[in-house]
Image 1 (cartoon, helix red, strand yellow):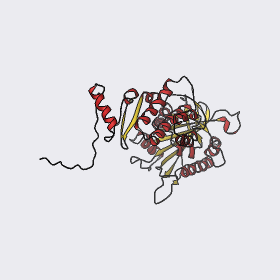
Image 2 (tube, one colour; image 1 turned 90 degrees about the vertical axis):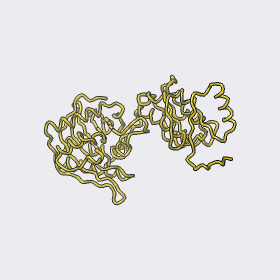
Image 3 (cartoon, rainbow, N blue to C red; image 1 turned 120 degrees about the vertical axis):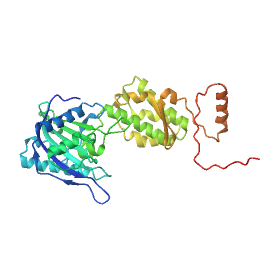
Image 4 (cartoon, rainbow, N blue to C red; image 1 turned 135 degrees about the horizontal axis):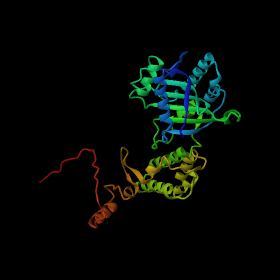
Length: 358
């Protein structure tokens, strides 16, 4: 999704102080609507254009929470407010963001609230810049924005966008929503939920790219944590990736993968409780985020050592317990038959005793 034209009408910057052991998160708000010079505005717009052009980090979402205390309820009228009411509304929006920072320890930073126009439609953009060492949170708007987007910390930010896409539709149905998360990668199950869900009230449940990736990551994590046997664990991971890659079925039904655990009723029930409950609906398979990983697999050698590589190569790897005489005997025969290309030995870190030599 790329926007053709983004314009900034008004901009205000508030500060969020992150939660610590000593205090809860809180805000340090401003009454100043900033006027940006040409260079600063171009810097900011360039960063926004760059962000919305990154298809692996910028996603269309769904507006879900629209109650009286929601971001949407405050932001939807921002374009028509006078200066005094605009400032107050952005302060109220900041308090919603602060509340989203109370669960866990979220880094503080700047909250840039922008009243603008995107492709000739009213829009509100909020930028959360995480507090890094390079951000002092001091100075004018021009200094802050240049420090934010030109410093080494320029990658640590998130953007939420609300666009009034159809004035003819009543209520929240007439709005489109988008999220950019610079910290997102396909190895993660989801975008930063404290930002898009807890603060903005958006949902990723209708985004097939994210759901396809999230289910695959959740499934492989479930297998990693619950399947003790190395070979079974390895084969299940390879199996789901092969199904994703080779199946002609365009719909992913998380419930259907429960059959992978039919041999263990308790594990199947656990799958239903942990995975199916999280993915209650089928979704259209969109391999955009997972394409590169489908031909690769990762196996755990120990709790802190993993091995990654092409799935066909990983599929040929075995882990042997030194006390397993059967597998040790088979290994010896495979070596003699030329079936083994490499042997990796993981030595124990326990102290050894010198043998007596007579």
